[in-house]
Amino acid sequence: MIVEAIKYKKTGIDWMPEVPEHWEIRRIKFIADIKFSTVDKHNLKEEKKVRLCNYVDVYKNEYVDKSLDFMNASASEEEIKKFTVHKGDIILTKDSETFNDIAVPALVTEQIDGLVCGYHLAQIKANEKDN
Image (cartoon, rainbow, N blue to C red; front, side, top):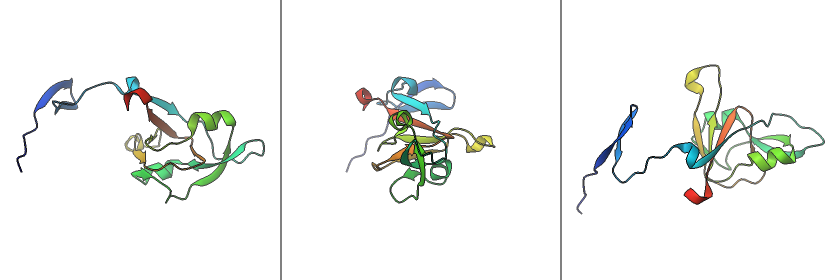
């Protein structure tokens, strides 16, 4: 088996000076939607029941899947439409008491019915046209 050496190109980015030559470099805002959740931990009678992906579900796990014990909560129809979690999403911690707890990611590896992204989290969804 012959393995070719990977060729690299310069990026002009201080924290990532080189990447493989075949990679395309684009800003995340042009290839994905980033949303900051407003869905809080509550159960209101006038809202629909959901399962809530919380801060600890993301902070303590590299992957979000059906094995996690999600909290039961409620959300408005608008929140459900905006913050439903789908396979392939990346969920990030968006705030914390210490800086090193911010932007901790977890990849959603399975479609989980009724799962909504909770408060203190950001949700990154790749644009359809860029997949």
